[in-house]
Length: 178
Image (cartoon, rainbow, N blue to C red; front, side):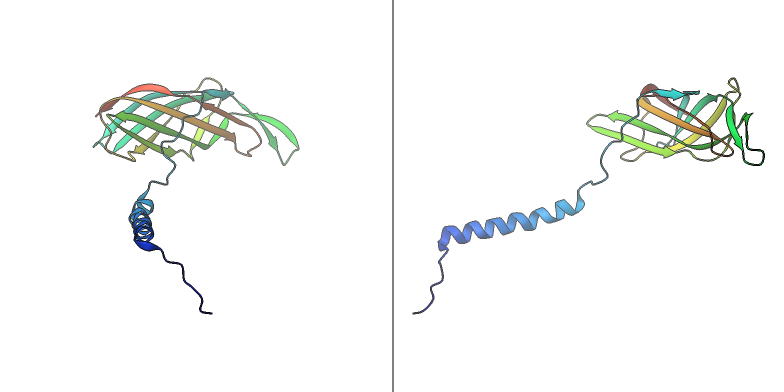
């Protein structure tokens, strides 16, 4: 007895072709989809033995916004490996931190992020240390106007045995041009 092949009929063929067309048209859109994770979040304000403040944000040629921050940190209790004793030191190293800018531009949300690493800090509880970092616009050029900025700093002693950190949380600022 011959084996029978099921017939799709004209409606079945139309449905099959339509489904294949939808899949074929959907592939280029999926390949171009934004998979970066979207707008980054800004950490809430927190601190341990440090303070931080965004002092200015200046737009340069619409694509870079220079974020300037100031911070203070407390003296470190540093372990001296030669003597086995803990000593107090005011010499700090910037081991991390960063700045994030988020700006609404009509229906678009522009944003940019930069990590801060390297450099020294005086951590005596009163010296004001400053750092500036260029933040590149990720979506469209920065506009002069209101934005939200968040910054953080992480400072350690030379041995990495004690550390201070601070985050600003979201701060409303006005982007200005030079």
